[in-house]
Length: 473
Ligand code: C2O
Ligand code: CU
Image (cartoon, rainbow, N blue to C red; front, side, top):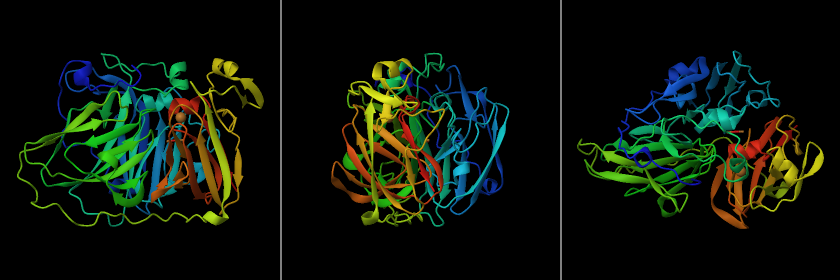
């Protein structure tokens, strides 16, 4: 069942209800300006749709995704986190440049929040964009059970659109009753492509369709929160423009073959004009795993007359965020060689200060290394120390048989080249997707002091050792 995912209609031989355009109501920005309480607790959701059993999950604010936190660039986020699940937890603000103490990494930036405990997160939001939040304790299980939500920081003057919507993409490993498979540490997942699910969801529901109106312009904020799965969405009959990747603006472009590719943890902002006619319906295909494409859902045009005759031609380019500009020529180069995993040929690696054979490591569920070191998740030691304000060149080399979305906390990387070929547009990323065998060069200014994690966002790879950290002093 490796890459086989299916819509419920295929899995259960059934076609269910459609998702209306009315999505979980985002918390109003006005409300977000004050303090928000975010409670993680067990609950149930209708993941499979109407007429099917509910799925027991862990969720923020009793909903999956958790409440959408919406702010304006320059606002201050104030979230009181309340932990009502039976495990300790934290909240990590994925992609945001936060002060180190607010980063949510247990044992590194804060103590884990025990069950019944609280933690007060407060920080300013320098960057506009599409971000998300999730726990950083037993992430494979806690995110896999539904703990995640979107965090949107609006530009001061966003491009004109008719609707600004968020699509949180996930997959789940569930049985026909909608129960989540509770083996989050299967060796096969740890050593192969991570925990891939068998049911896809959009905003917490396995939906068949998404309703749109002819002539409208949408901004769709895609967030891939899956533990391991990559998505490559293709919008039949439409030509989405990508205007931001990982929350950071890019010169608007039409992706190759119309496919928007997102590794686990990544985001993309799209502008898409609804150029069909009332009553039309177009497939949105998931095409990442070539052998098993499937219809993710359909864009269903309602019967209303077109909102406008001609496609809007107002500008869609976003203003840049205030990221420090790397000084390439002055940079120091740091190699990060990723090895291990199934079919990887790694013979041994160092773990807790001792060199061990891959056989011994596999016994304890540790099968990946960065620069020959398997991360000790209980005792994080920085592999790099950078002086504040210096430009660093991180050169990732993926010596494994699997792709890895590598996520750096607290900073944003500028991608320079892939396999020695300079990238053709300026691209910034906090979650850098690196194909099997690929070498990717990136630059960043180490301007945020603290101890920052760098890990694969395939959560099972992280758990099985694919992490390191950098200290900025
Ligand atoms: Cu989205 Cu270290 O995580
Ligand atoms: Cu990985």
